[in-house]
Amino acid sequence: MTSRKAPETIRVRRDFLAAAKAEKQVRRGFVLQARQRGDDAPARFGLTATKKIGNAVIRNRIRRRLRALAVDLFPKHAHSGYDYVLIGRVQTQYRDWGALKSDLKSALKAIHADPA
Image 1 (cartoon, rainbow, N blue to C red):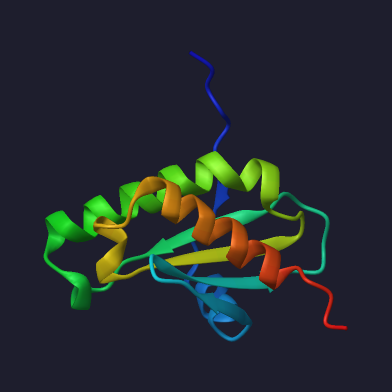
Image 2: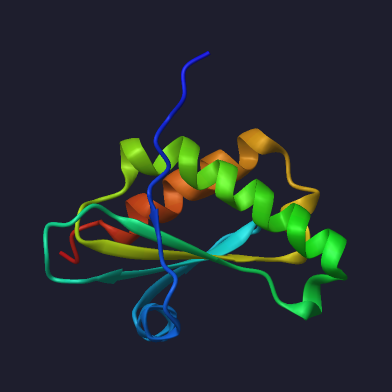
C-alpha cells in the first residue's frame, strides 16, 4: 500500500478569509476557492462544512470526503504558491466519487486557465 503525503493545511482564519475574497469555482459537489499567495511554497488546502448542510455526523463525513479528495488530487493538479479552500455542499455526501474527482479537476483547470 502506497501512502501519499497529504498537502499542507490552512489553519489560520485570516488565510480562509483571504481565500474567500479570491477566485472561486462552484461545482455540484463543492465550492473551490483559490488564492495565489505570491510565493513558491507548496499548495495548501482548507476544508469548510457549515451547519446549513447538516448535523455534526454529516459535516464530518463531508469533510472526510473532501480531505480524501484533496490528498488524492492536489499533489498532481494543484499549483505551488496557492491556497485552496473546499467548501462542502449538501450534495457532497451523495455525489459519486468519480464525479467529485471530475468536479475538482475541472474546477482547478478553470481556476488556472489563462484569462485570454
